Amino acid sequence: MSPQAHIVLRNVSVNFPVLSFRDRSLRSRFVRAVTLRREAPRPHIVSALNDINLDIRAGDRVAIVGANGAGKTTLLRVLAGIYHPTVGDVDVLGRCLSLFDLSAGFDEEATGYENIMRRGLVIGARRTEIDARRAEIAEFTELGDRLDLPLRTYSSGMMLRLIFAVATAVEGEIVLLDEWIGVGDQQFRKKARQRLDEIVARAGILVLASHDIDLIKSTCNRAILLQEGRITAAGTTDEILGRYLGGEARA
Amino acid sequence: MQRRKIRNAKRGNRIQSAAKEILAQAAQFDRWGTLALMDISLRYRRTVIGPLWITLTLAATIVSVGTVYAALFKQEITGFLPPFAVGLIVWTLIATTLQEGSNIFVASGHLIKAVPAPLIVHVLQMIARNVLIFAHHLVIVVLLYVVMPWPLHWNIMLVVPGFAILLVVLLGGSVALGMLCARFRDIGSAIVSGLQFIFFLTPIIWTEDSVRGTAFHWLTRVNPFATLLDLVRKPLLSQPTDAEQWLLGLAYAIAMAVIGLGCYARYRHRVAYWL
Image (tube, rainbow over all chains, first blue to last red; front, top):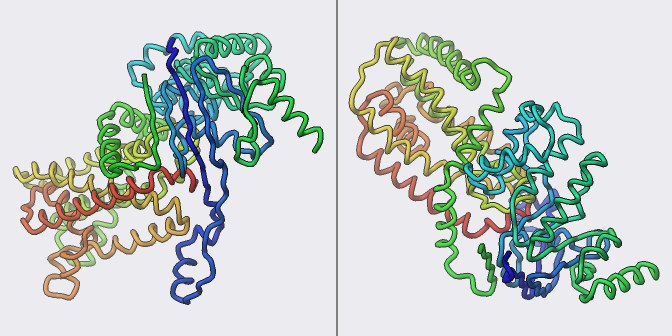
């Protein structure tokens, strides 16, 4: 494993333009320009993350807690490299395994095996790498010959098995999770839980956004509390959970 | 170990880093090429002859429209049909690519917000897909040489540089239009009707010779689509091309490369926020 994986965020802010129908229209912009109307055509800006400073080192298991809309997913997306912050510096050392939106890249019409290839290519793996992992992924899904059938014939449970198996087939020093993934029937759920535990144990860093208090207590050693895009508290899990739950009780 | 550093304070050379990213992704053709191949095979999964269906539809259009227009313009079918057929095939590539290109980031929105990947991958995949479909249509060109019979000349080799120029224009155009349409959602439909309009202004169903001496003739010179189309069509037909067209084509390619690269360097990190 890599003891030197780290994540450092310095003064990171993310500002979203919330584009209304009028802002999205070039025609209305043109009309405004020729009719010389000067009133503010500024798009509404939402500040999703505000001045975030983070220093996560190898061995850290960080929980992100906060109400809906506090910026948890946005922060995970910044860590994953999907959002490029508007302000501030990001330094991520280590391969990120982002375990959210797992179904992106799958195609209904393609067979199970083809979807293994598709999703692999989409997340940037090489063909040879995927070919090497194919049998292992297939075995984990326990779907057997059904992997030769198109995805549209799968039950939702079967689909989740495949999606989970493909997503967790790659290694990463940094694991990013937006809620713990629980999939399939009891037996597969146990297996999935075990695989996820293994991945987390191997990873240098885990960042988990969750509302599941027991899960956070059992997996994380640090926590940060997000409120309206700002980190309002950071510290040990118990301390932060105390504040978070206390704040919720008051409200 | 993989490292990702973003420093907003010190931007560095954005054009250079954008160009590096594009070249690095373009080199990974087994990634976007395989995805493009899969796209095609999936779309025609439940048909027997697969993507040749589009070729067949196009061939039907070429034969029916071609014979009618040849009669209307009182031209020999053997002289009219080949340029019309090849023109329509190349135009189909140009129009579909630009249309899909203008929608590319909106259409891949789910993926862009779920998986960290350079934006250019989506564009490369889309262009590869359309080039593969274009390759299927070349069956029609082969048939023209056999059936018509059309004289073959070494000029046909010039299709390689001609096609390269067209690809650069389509790549730059798709990136720029894709970003514009992600930000301003009402442009997409304007582009569709714009392309329809340009189709009629480009010598495809009419020929350059038929307008010689009229006011329309200058259109075939100033219309970039006419030039780019000819740089692929004329070689495919084994016809000679003139130096002026090559210079113009090269100028268009450079201009679109600069525009596309500029947009990519400036806005590639903003696109995810517009989706």
